[in-house]
Length: 429
Image (cartoon, rainbow, N blue to C red):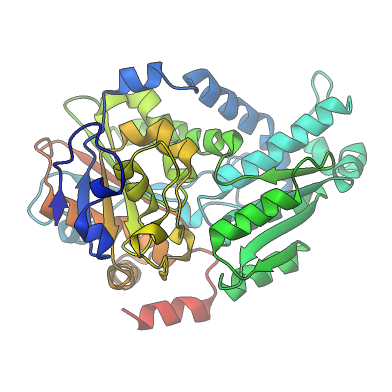
């Protein structure tokens, strides 16, 4: 079902489409979308902020290359892969266009998109501490951050985060590699294997009886005003947002290398799985800075946890939870099991989002199996959501500019999925 008739300015629970309340899959075309120039002009963030994040990434290239195998000169990035003709035909049906896969399910270091935010924020904190301690000097190679006085400094500090798993892993991997104490707060029903791999890193895992949002709130309260610690706030972190935004520069480089134009005559549809919103929001902001209105971001959420759709439809005056609609926030896409979207993200990129597509868990398992058997892609259920959304989007709300469109499905996790977990997911298809 497609809903595309909410009047501009409508807000409140009454603006939330009935299919969302019934946990039914749908395509919601964003009635509050505005032209990129006006949104960016009013934004608290700028291209200079994104470029600054990219510059910080590059300063840390020597460190990442020294610490982690599989990085190209220290760069944490993934391939842009063309979908094979059979997969493209399955996804597009009779619609024109080409399909590509931004393969963050196989991202170096963490095997998930959260490295772009979580690793980045730990690096930003480490750099801030080192500068305050007088350890930075002209010409210093940042490979030095892994040893000596730097490591002694970091050992006296802690990094904490609330997470469903992948952000916590990204923060944990980077934090422990530098010698920080790491504490990850998780809901009791978060995946056991994700908790175990954090403990194997040496991180402290704190379990909470509530959901992801309550775990984040508890961690925030625990680490409030601690001078020896930094809390990575998935709901309200500027560093996370800008770390993700810098990924747009990677995609821009890859599109150019593949000879793919992105302009008014060649729109770019990007399908982004959405939990709290930091990763898809940052990517959306970065791509809009680079390509303006030629980018058409499509967020993808589970029918049980469409928190960004609910927030955008209800308005941005206050945070709105899916629980208020009677939804249960229970989904196999654990990385997307979030009841309340980031207001920072919703207010920053809400007017830039073209559509939100909600998908049932059954579609995730179907596509997980199709992608494994037909394309050899090993994904978590949440990472298959973009594929589940693409066909529904084109079938229910086909845009008029598809003749020369490029579709990019951004995968988000899967490389580190244990064999038993992956086999169990395949069995549910």
